[in-house]
Length: 239
Picture (cartoon, helix red, strand yellow):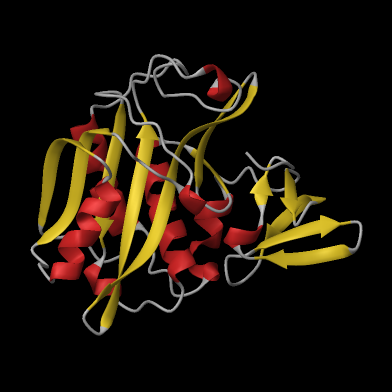
């Protein structure tokens, strides 16, 4: 992929790196290509769900990918960045945007990617949010069964600054996401999705694989279904 070049602002505390960067994008200031925070009070993930960012324990980074303005397949762009993060920090992947670790007690989420297309003049700019639990020492009781951090998994976590630099380097090494086939080999080497349960409009199903557009293929009682990212919940139940 094309490198992320420009200024990445560090703000110790704000509501959301994604919202902060989106405001810069809308203003047309292309010298600001990223925002990182030590603490987010209103961090969010896919479909508007909240994202926990305790002070000093996680990477909260949003990047504006200006070279990919008006990209026709934004989902693949987000998956390409997810692949870069997974390779930079040696993580596994779960469709469509989860960064996970495979532990003795099961698959645990350690991070995620949020992809949004932000209007800026006559263009739409991809803004990609990256959240990774690096040194989070404890989670709320409702998340303990599904979430973890590199620290809790027994790894030596990088600092947020180190993680950011690793990810920027890894983005340069990921193929252009012109089609799923460009990403498929490296993605599937880290993918834990096949065989996992998903819920589609209240119907349980089992993930089979990913098609040429980066959409999930799910087997239900009615047969195989192709599912865009906004229409499936991992785990067979809504959170």
